[in-house]
Amino acid sequence: MHTARLRTAAAAGIVLTAALALAACSAATPSPDETTTTAAEVSTPFAGETLTLATDANYPPCQFFEKGSDVMVGYEVDLWDAIAAKLGVTLEVENTQFASLIPGVQSGRYDIAMECISDNAEREQEVSFVNYIFDKTDVVTIESYDGPITEGDDLSLCGETMGAQTGFDTIDKVNDILNPACAEAGLDPVVIQEYPNAADTYNALNSGRVDFMILGTSAAAYLNQTAPTPINYASIESFPQKYLGMVIAKDNTELQDALLAGLEAVIADGTYMDILEKWGMESLALEEPGINLATTRPLD
Image 1: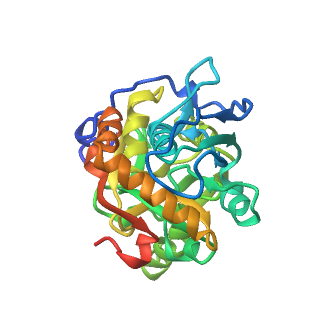
Image 2 (image 1 turned 60 degrees about the horizontal axis):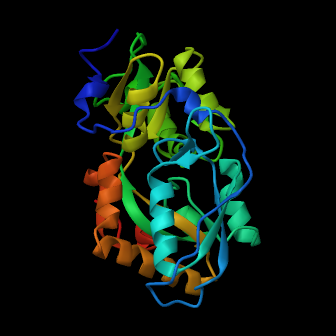
């Protein structure tokens, strides 16, 4: 056990108030939910309309199902409900696979997609993002892991096996950034095992079928609260901080502007910070949201 080299989850400094069993991440697929339409507080062309929002509710604390029920919860659920109330729209929420979220928006099947989706230049070639938070990246191992992964040494991941959800940009980052560094150092590449959803990926980690996962800091901290076995995590220097955002079709600038206006209203009245504080994520708040910030206002 490498407790001296890996930060324990307790040392991460993010304490989440909700601590539900990991079984809450099971891939239940209830019928679509709908928010309740209220009088619009922000004037946009969409007041009174129904918008379709797609998500993959298997990724706490973003969105997930409470154990034994079909009630979807999470900080993004609270956020999209608050924005919908400001805009006076009804959201029809559909639970689907993560890999289908961006293609579904591109095809017009969905108006919006939200699932803690990372904004990057490559994705901005396909869709647009309304950015509402930023996130950092952690390497997660179970406490009994006894391999070479070391805090502050990204090359210690070389030759180890990573579990990742299909469609997550961590796969591209490992292939584009980390594995070339491994090759340059004369080390074996990271082996990537893909899984269709977060629950299967977590199960692979907990059962020892993979050595590590790469998660956003908020998801890693939540996993600490819910995992059936203790976890450790380490920072990864190769991967920069990232914006997360609502995904909208590139040509639907009216909806992009409307969602940004709704988000700004939620920030202005304090609801935004209330939501983040509820989920222990206030340190990741954006003071100034925006559109396609990965390219228009990159993080340091």
